[in-house]
Length: 451
Image 1: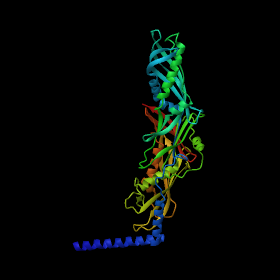
Image 2 (image 1 turned 90 degrees about the vertical axis):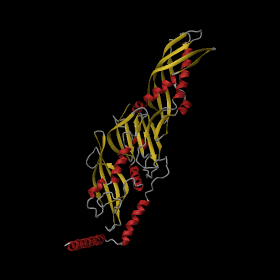
Image 3 (image 1 turned 180 degrees about the vertical axis):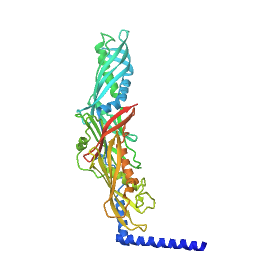
Image 4 (image 1 turned 135 degrees about the vertical axis):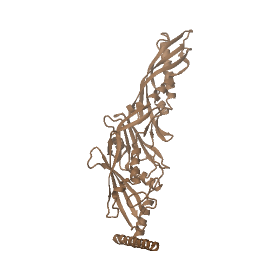
């Protein structure tokens, strides 16, 4: 009986092998595939991978790959503590005031409060006007030996260009104090009238000059806010500022970044990007990404094995999978049904040229609905369509393929609430609208800061 059982299993295996061989021949026959055609499919795949350039030399000229726009009242929210601290530091001093005519007064001064505000200034392309009021106290040893104290009150106004530069892993915006001093010192109107009626004008003049010099020297290290480059998991990714604009009409700050990815630049001027990032009424922040950057980020992730390149025919990642994928293009456009949503599409190709499953290549499109729901980004992969007659009958499984999911991750991180940064407070961005304009995918919303 044991021998017969062994013979039975042997016959079963033989039959299965014959059926599998016949199926393979049938599949090859159906596709009209031969060794030459298999080699052609493989060559086309290898050529497509070769054209994935990976990282290139960072070019700071051209349209931004990522960008943000902030209304200046939001910048004020982020920067008030740092600005007020700079004023307090400037007023916390002592020494000797030259009152003229060989007379002087020793003094010590401190700040008790400051209330400053930033607004875009038309005086230069990247200028802000810092203005507001401060108060404090001053003790003085006046000529003749009298000791007097007085409240200190004053107003402050200074046009300062902003500078953009690296700050660790971020692009940050700072005061360009050196350039501001070349344009002129702060305008100070300080009052300490209870010190002495006799010396009031001399003390006021000396205090104004002293405070202006002190503020100018103390504003240099003040960082207003930063752009925290999203972490895409791409080792070797570099970035640099390529667009910086302060729009005085809308009181909006706009910062654009380029990366060292091989994004094909779209036609258009920097002003087109500035106009596209204009803020809706009720919004104080906008974040944007160029779709071409998403394509390149996915390609680099595939090349670096950050996401799988090989899959089963039903779209499941497998190290030895017969199907290999290449990302061709990421597209953004209006959703066909939902007017408040966008349709995101990833064009990709599938190549199969080994494993005895026939030789073929297929073009495919994964489409997703992208919208704002309860202030959060919402993705919904709606369809995967293979555009050629083919063999992948279970197309639905490709919606969960890891490179499709990675594409969504790149978009999420680009428009993440943590992109805007502040040293002094946490920053949250609650989205309220997504749109596409000037070749950019744009999220606008309301940013808020907290301790």
